[in-house]
Length: 81
Image (tube, rainbow, N blue to C red):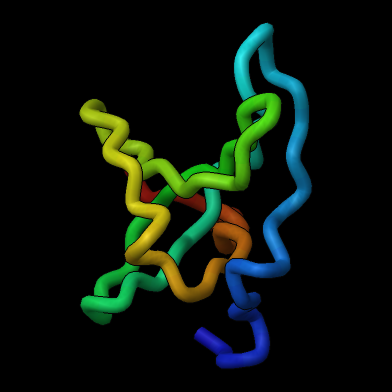
């Protein structure tokens, strides 16, 4: 991955209204202070600051761990079966 694709958390991804809940980004890759990379959402609830939530089934808040984010790569053009 190119270093130029990573954006700091103070430049959040585009958010959209998904339902009556928070504004939410599409899934993105996030870089964590531990050095790991995972898929997460950026969310903003009314009256609150942005929060980063991991996309696994637990939906853990990882806001204090995220330093950078980048869009997911494009899917493969062909998939071998």
